[in-house]
Image 1 (spheres, rainbow, N blue to C red):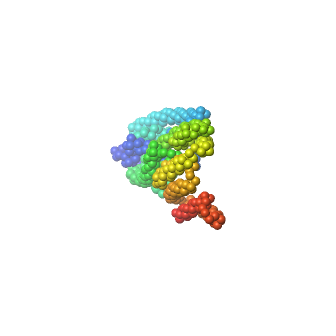
Image 2 (cartoon, helix red, strand yellow):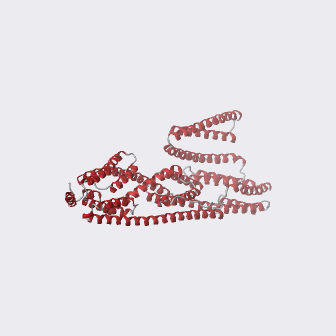
Image 3 (spheres, rainbow, N blue to C red):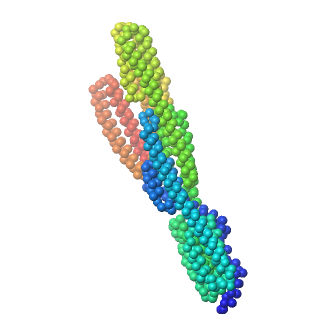
Length: 612
């Protein structure tokens, strides 16, 4: 075939649109958007995998760990630092940010505040250096990509000019080859420009190839070489359908697609066929990749719903309704359980996870701030009560030797009433100040008795007072709030101790009534506690795995055996005392009650073992 025939053939091909161009070059803006979305998805997947890995073995536990991690990132090459590194560092810092230690008064010490401030400033300085380093590198890369884009556009323009010079296209073929190599050797451009610049490059190459007037053998060789290269890529692309790692398959497919675009055209009659096969293989990988992310989104939605519920549970705790130390400690245990459950949940989407963590932490912080305020106020009240009772003890000691029995006695009764109206004091001070007051009261009334001033009437008044206390106990019920019931019992016991002697013939009777009623109320409290412990244990059993249940079963078996041994010892002692004593006494009653409690404990442990 001569050169003129080749020219005619080339002219014929110019009149027919290249099918490969139409199939492979989608709208530039749409392609760029898809690629940017894909890049974000890939990066997000990488971050999630990193977060899981860090959560398993490398999650920083202290502020020092986070600072060390920040220093390690700062030491990296700028190209190895990403914006996600900075965001992850900030999230980790918020999770472990040190709070100043509090002194005995609940206030942060100056040293603790200074140390917390020093760490905060150190972390902020390192984070600023990381950002500056990343920003400088990003600016360099943007400038480099802009230069690459300009160079690629220049090459495309030169190829287009060569293609227009149809008379000299044979002579310019070597230069055309050089330009192709130069184009492929140039680095990346902005992702939004990548598809558009490649499309222009492909169009220019095809126009040049269609105008090429070299001998048919050389032209066919060029088409065949391109076909062989694309066939190899097609084989590898089709094999990716069997790749187990969806992310790896997707990334490799992107690499194959980029290589495909760098290879020149094939013979016109094969362009549609080979592109459709490659596009079909690409679609298979893309669908698997999309399904993978849909599954992950479903998991994230479940985690988001679970974490939202945990936030609502913490926010639903009414701190204003918490009265007394027991109520606050119970609520604290509930918060700690919710925090443990939070750590067991998976990841929600990145934004939702960050927002939910902030919400959960804010709710927990608000609870513990309210708790600290309550305990601080309680300490102040306890101190005020101690001051008031100390003043009464001082006055009682100053008045205890008075012989003005009527006036001093009335004042002592008045002081005892004032004592009862003053609230509790700290346990470490309670016995000492109470003993001072009671010793002074007892001394005065003993001296008064010795003086023979109305001893019988005083004893009858004491008897009436003690009977009134028994009636107050009878008015209490076991179904009252536990803290309120315990405080009421304690108040009666304190008041009972302040009342002096009663007539001897009534002493045992009124004491038995008093002791029996207190025992009944305490039994009710004990039963309530046992029910709560049983419910808590049932909840714990529901959360146990097999190993945890086995360990708990072994522990309870050991406790059960110890309790049974203790019961046998008590029963032997009880039998000995019964044999020696024909009438009841306090020691015997105490042993009987202790034996009964042991039997209840054994029954409770046996029930727990059944639950396991």
